[in-house]
Amino acid sequence: MPEPIPNFSNSVKLKYVKLGYQYLVNNFLTFLIVPIMAALIIQVLKLGPEEILSIWNSLHFDLLQILCSSFLTIFIATVYFMSKPRSIYLVDYSCYKAPVTCRVPFSTFMEHSRLILKDNPKSVEFQMRILERSGLGEETCLPPAIHYIPPTPTMETARNEAEVVIFSAIDDLMQKTGLKPKDIDILIVNCSLFSPTPSLSAMVVNKYKLRSNIKSYNLSGMGCSAGLISIDLARDLLQVVPNSCALVVSTEIITPNYYQGSERAMLLPNCLFRMGGAAILLSNKRKDSRRAKYRLMHVVRTHKGADDKAFKCVFQQEDPQGKVGINLSKDLMVIAGEALKSNITTIGPLVLPASEQLLFLFTLIGRKIFNPKWKAYIPDFKQAFEHFCIHAGGRAVIDELQKNLQLSAEHVEASRMTLHKFGNTSSSSLWYEMSYIEAKGRMKKGDRIWQIAFGSGFKCNSAVWKCNRTIKTPTDGPWDDCIDRYPVFIPEIVKL
Image 1 (cartoon, one colour):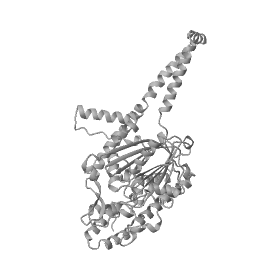
Image 2 (cartoon, rainbow, N blue to C red):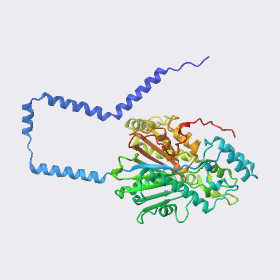
Image 3 (cartoon, rainbow, N blue to C red):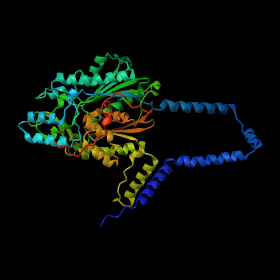
């Protein structure tokens, strides 16, 4: 027997009931105040001019009372505006675009793997299976040193990669914004696995001859979520340093961290991580409020490092042959889910409308008092955000967040296409995703963006931005020569 046709009228009615509920709760104060104000206005209109004049004359104003009231009003207003946090603006940002000579098609990657791991065919086969299911495309890039057989990860080649990626992104940002080196008050560079001496931040200071009193910071070892940690640090500094600009650089240097052993858990990063970097200009200057693209609303950081499993789920170590690599635990997705849950619990009250918070509260009370088996209510974050930038750490990460947050394919499109085009570029991947949304012409004034990133430690960090102005489709950037081809269909398995 054919399956009965579902009664769509019920689902449509339920949809309109939910929409009505959201509208009523989110605009409760408006519905309460408007009738009261209307009633007051009607009562005033009913009074004659003589009655209104007599009421006015009956009021007695004392000069001392007026002065005291005025002083108190000015004092309260001054305290409010002095204690109010400064607005932090994202003026603009730039993403590094690697040359075509650095591209690594699947065929090239697998040929190199067979030559490097010729004594271990099982490891080669494992890498091929990972690539087939990775969600990466044929245009991802690796640094020149990794193209050699065998790779030549020296300190010199690693520095060369860092200079090319970081300087290219900063140069492009300076050209777009008109930023001059002397205008930079704060410099923050984050790179997790490459931490030379002098530091990468010192390298930037030397290249651009920045001021001697610049506040510079170099963050390392903080994983793929370090980009949002840098944003949080810049925000805190801009709150206490008035009329200033902060340059944030997020990247990961691949050259010294390409694993050449045969341990499967340590081969996985070779298949996913690729070249990339971004430079971001933040400002607390009022004059930048008009030209800035976004305004920073919230940053929420969650650290699960107190738990041993979470601490070791992304771990740099040596294999039995003494070769250094990153070991990714099988428990990674479970730990990431727990970190996300904690992060959502914190960020939810800051961003969710009252309708969603009430539903969540009622469900929580119902589970505690009436029936613990009630299904937990997952807040609809689509009510709080128009765009989602989920760290392109891998297909499994994107799939899990799409499922848990009940997002549509369009909501995770930027993350999937970034993974396909550029691979996992670590802390800079969020900016490639933001650039994708802009390149598609979808970023409108007032839109809210949620950036979510995961990193070793284990950390889950979120940043919320609000679009300051409708952004015109850019003619440059990392997507300029290919945005018309995207989105592309990404099969579950690409047979190699």
